[in-house]
Image (cartoon, rainbow, N blue to C red; front, side):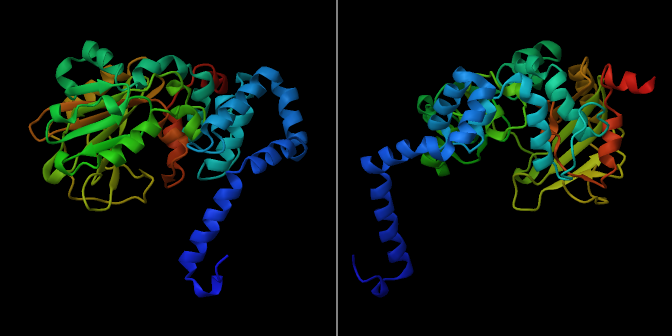
Length: 368
């Protein structure tokens, strides 16, 4: 080995990295790790085997081996979780991830956070697959309110390599259909980094959103991944004003308004009622008292659309966009807003939002 003292820290790290890669890549190392795996993990492995049986255990080993390098350490756990273990798993996840780090009461849920968790397991959300699938939901929206409210679709593919970028306009939005946040705005095709985009979409289309984030958002579990290209929509200055209507038993009551998502400025979130009165609480960010956010000209129409699309659900969030030309575009349907773990400011807003959700059986029992 070269005299390490004469090398820079970066050069030393590079040499050590190559040596470690050589060791980890050798057959002797892999054999050694395999031979010692059982004694190193015998107690934990045996416990898992006894609880889940040989079929689930084999599935876990296969899933972990396939995904641990591209997902996270808990991906296989959620992928192989049995229904009988949902309550305990969700309680542990909630305790670790909810912003209050308080125990989850699934038997008597009161807050918005708790009721969101209850709906994940007992609310039949796994049956709403076609409403959270960003491709499949288009047919439902067209039937309910009309095709004019859909963002024009430019193409749909199973794999990134199928996309013919020459046929796409100068600006567009790429997104997956099977999760949340897997979007890739392209405001200028001439500046598109195709290598970066391909890397992201190749990863996203391999992953199951339900297992990737955990928390049992089962409505996404069986969606077949697709890549969509939609017309690029925007308001003034390249921003896109996002109106998220929180609807309770088919009645919109709270609007989470978001701006500055696509511009070089701090994102702003403000909560209004459906008459555009400022509400005394906020989500994620501390409450602000804005005087520069005008009432949308087509607010009443957006409320009507949200009411139509939310009918029949104890809670659903309907996302809409109001464009400068007066048109309204549908964004998505969300049944588990931020998976139910986003912070509310002040904290008692969580209880207020929860009081607006009526869970059949659960809240009726509490009223007796």
